[in-house]
Image 1 (cartoon, rainbow, N blue to C red):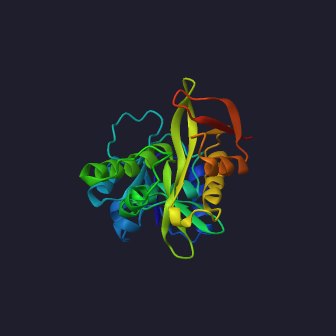
Image 2: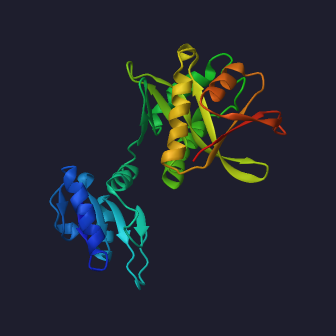
Image 3: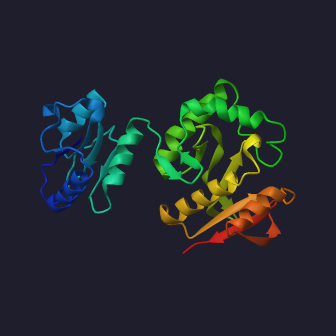
Length: 272
């Protein structure tokens, strides 16, 4: 359920647009004080400019977007999001805020054979198993996920990276079996002193050789272009990692004819 309780009327047209869009998805909409809603707190996403609603949402663990109306001078803490307008907000965005609040993984892409979604805490053991396989760390840095420190690091990553950037390294699932078979996604990187977006991918050894890495990498590249609006994407690969070079070239990346200081080959894909 979406609850709209806005005392400021200047954005009424945008709220009406959202109400209509939510109705197309059969999502119930209510306009009232949050405390008066009878639905379970876990089922509610509130959009409000009321301090009373904000306090109630914190107490009941309700997902909430707070509208900071022009001239508002109060300080609101603990909200999932504070906005100053609704022009950029749609149903998918509302759903994302709700899922972020409740720690639910966002589905990034579904391909013919794969589901790529945000990672959750329960994925850690599968990742640990993959990284322990012989040769798997020959071409990538050790993510250091072992022990309690590794668990803490992993938990902090999934709680902060996705929420702040709306991208990161995700979980790759083979759809027929439901098995976690690897990781793939977009990371923040640096090249020649500039901040860049970097493609990363890793597939469990027993699933390699079936084109699944290429399928995952292509889906992540499309996400970078279509969702993030990225103009270019980079990949850094050991020159003797022939399989990864074939993969990256096969999805349209081109090699830059010089190595990084670490001896990695640089691959770049320009996007419209």
